[in-house]
Picture 1: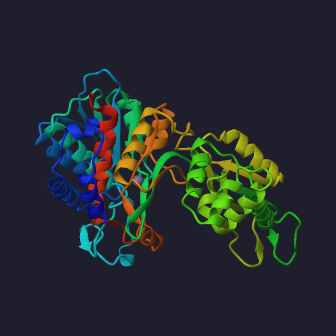
Picture 2: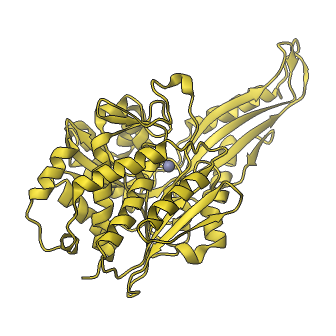
Length: 467
Ligand SMILES: [Zn+2]
């Protein structure tokens, strides 16, 4: 499928974009990218413990062979981050290309192949990290290699950051780099993971570009009551209080609040959706229909409902140890995913008001991803991204997207740097059958690695190549 698109691309007459001053042998690039990708997948960087240093060394050596000096930065041995920089003429601020080198663990028994062997099967490459995020690590590596070989004249420095610890331990990766080595990675724009290019029957329908994300707030409820014999019911039963509080929070719908990204997302999605779905996406903006459309999304499209508001999901309940003993306390864990501009204090206060029970305490856990402003969708970087998508997939729409999950882009955006997440082509049906990021049998379409490299190449040339 991607192969067809690539052929198509090669034959299209393009305006004299700066990109086209640097012709590329894409067959060779693909072969080389697949080689690096395979090697990177075979380095097990399951976090914990991470062992990202092995990948950092690989990248340093691969780029050193091209005459590019990179440096390793570690907060702890074994957890190295890697940074390489290609200098521009300094007339504009740098672009940061970022990808994380660690991966989440696997439940081996649920995989049909060895998760760290980069097995090729039926047009896919299987392996932990194929989608998250060694595809982007590879694209960044190829980008620097290609820029250097083609001796591209740049207005901006291109910074490549391959970072450790994204999967739950940003203290080793992005936090450490921001706190201790900010000078090395400071940029005007950042390109990273988190987007998806979605195809149906071989045709790309839309290109999702991550422009903002919700941030996790970890909250626990602690209900207290009087302990006693189960034969004597009490009005201050801790389990009952907890259950009531959880039920109230689950019934509660915080008000819908859209931002530039989600507004544009629903508008554009409507343009490629069946009539009924489209009517509900657009209904969100209509005061008379909004409530009904929100209800419809909550019932039919939970993923879209999650984009409308800060959401609360109870995930673990615990309390009690014996049938005939009333326990003195019980707890609930809540996974709260906040809109990017949510004021945490205000949300805690709202939750307490909804629970409205002095016997139920709201226990806050530290917030490890900061709130942040959504990245603009009307600046030069986003325009370049849209132009690249238009060029590569003329029939598709670009959807600025708010991720419900969390990435290291949150930290970078919180520094005031707009961040844009891109990603490989995925087949809609295959996506629905699992095999995604963090899933069993994580896999990538073999033919989608090259378009990923092409996207990054065109986007970086578009924003950084000297005219
Ligand atoms: Zn990731």
